[in-house]
Length: 135
Image (cartoon, rainbow, N blue to C red; front, side, top):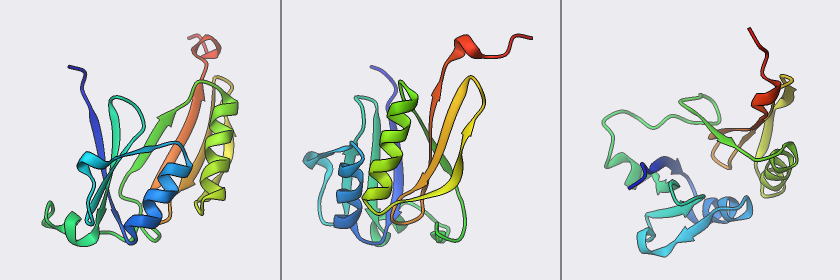
């Protein structure tokens, strides 16, 4: 079995967050969704678990950060083209997210930065390794 990645995010409004993630290309797995949590599927191996604050607190012993004021993690997603990066960020902004940094072009990699409704950071990038600088 391939390793699966589950990113767990505390959210203030579960239904609005589900709608946001659906708008940017995730699908909901109702098998792992209830009034306290939603499993949002990106690929066969990448999942985002949206958890109400009360549910999230069941798994932690520290306080939940306010992701609009502090950064605890940057989630990074690769895409197959620069156009896919742009489309992802445009969908996120249209769904209520915010692009929090200028787009970056490193020659071999294009990157854009967006946050979800609760301020969780996502770096979306396309990398062309044939353009990676040779040493």
